[in-house]
Length: 110
Image (cartoon, rainbow, N blue to C red; front, top):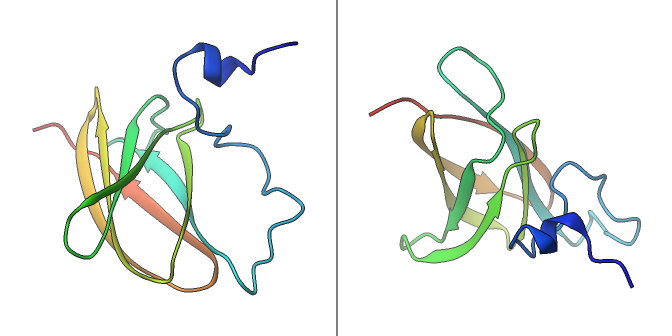
């Protein structure tokens, strides 16, 4: 039995740059996806992206792919994305609807 590389690296989240699974029904599902970029507009791989609910409570966290891509499956509504990286941090509020919600999340040095 082989172990997916992300499990071996200590992260059980699915590969963030992989296509959406074939069984995802975008009429029923809400997907929040995007790319984390630094101040120079370059993709930030290895950033931690947190999903916070409307009250600011932690809900989930993923690590961006080498291309800076992240993805969450969530309920429709207001969410905050918080990126933490060696290039800095950034927050973005998203009002997500069913289907794919594409966003850009920028990080800046403190």
